[in-house]
Image 1 (spheres, rainbow, N blue to C red):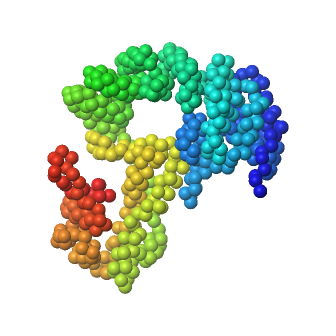
Image 2: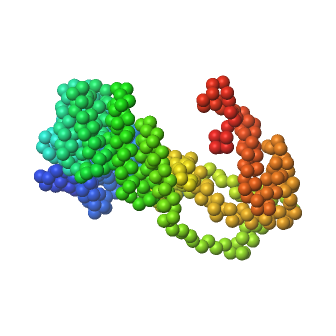
Image 3: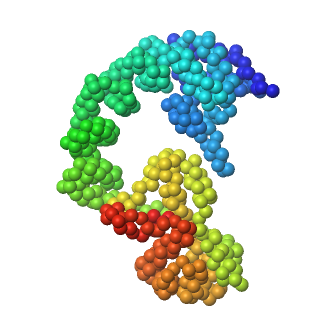
Length: 524
């Protein structure tokens, strides 16, 4: 039996009419909240409840989304992943089906406010394929005309501001191959570009990029005007004054470099890079040590790319001084972590088998080698607790330089998992140390026995070196242990990789015809 169609709920009709009748620009956030409140007050159920929910969802979707699950202009505002790895979208767009299209079509047929007509017709055009129907170009043309009316009537607020409407107009015009509409939307975007130049905001870089580089959109005259404005703004934002803003200068520099690289104008590229570098060097002089080190990183990169070796070395020296100063300013943070004696004994009894040394060592390995599934779950759990931290990169500092950069959880899950493993090892090391000590005491293990068990599958060529490294570890000679065991572990990993049928060499980066062995990081 087919699903029952969604009826229009009179109370929801009233909410929409009231919003449209205010005479003010429509605010879809406010409207969505009112519709959900009305739905809850009505205590609807079944198809009526779903109809009211779909009515509200029309205004609760994010725009310019192009992410999961549809990769379309409209999409959920967020998502959650439960402990089973199941993704739940907010709103739960997976509940929508083609009946939503019918409801939105009914709304479009009776609404004359341009903001509502733009939203309903654009939903019908954009989401039809995702909800099981073919697109109708009539909906795209209706949406394009409605967005244009919104701009003409000033019927836009924060969510549907003039820039968003003009950008969407351009997209629809290109989809329809409507040359006249493309020109109109391009002219509106140029008007907005010029208005922004006189405002504190200065730029919407999506306007810049679409007018400069989207195929068949811009013109030589438009390109010349935009580049001239960007060059002027770069000068203002990179030099000390009322409009000094190195971060804006960096964003402008990205676009100018792309333009001048396309023209093969190395002189202009160097000019842009030098301006950005100088701005961040100036900003660093105004900042405390830790922040200054980050700003000088940017300056050093830009000076190096510009080929200014003298400035690059100057900034590197300043950065080293800033790092040293910030280290001196850092305060130590610690917390107490207590493990009960009985708890530790129970753990050791479960790990160390008094009768079987091989089983004991296997249990230790099994316990302390991280598993990818639980490790990934811990990373995701941390991301749910600290979403801002999960969204930004992590710089790992080593003395005077950045030794590693770990991306966000979305961009660099592998890096985050490696970082989580390092953090886990701080606590796991307490248990691992006790387990190894107990195993050696119970079974009377010496360095020869440990090395022999480690090499039971023939992973190492030089067992004497392994024995020497283990003995250094047992006696607390950590420097010797590291310098002896790490190369042996690297060799063992390569042998394991070769046993899996994978190559253990790569081409030399600068000497054609020569190959070199993979290092540990490349093997991992």
